[in-house]
Image (tube, rainbow, N blue to C red; front, top):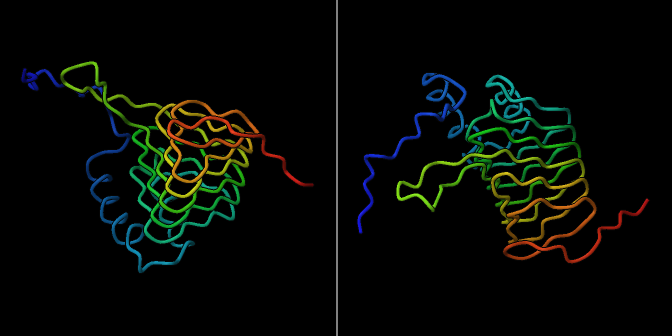
Length: 183
């Protein structure tokens, strides 16, 4: 049975910036962020702020990072975003202080309603609280809150909120042990 895609309507979704700004960001993202030949984090921080991102001090953005819409991004102090991370923020992503987003990690705020034949777009915010760590190639799904000092292990998928001071692993990620931070 073929779905009637003429009923697909996401006109409710507004990206948060006009077409000209999105067009400009598209090329800035390619030239300065996705481009592996640009190692200069300070330039990236400056450009993100110019496009409406709120960034704290000490933010490090490694090469080959893809950011969908900077105007939906809020980042605290001393945050590290690793190579090939993908911040697909169709809506707000809030990243707290002292957060690490490792290489190849994905933060996905959008999905599609698989219960409808038109697969309508669904967007939900993501929050990474202070001290959280998203492991290499891990995925944070729409609507997830990663609690303070939580860890999402390598290649894991967070489909539900993560409690503070816990380590999560697997697909879907489940808590495997408590995170104890030495003082």
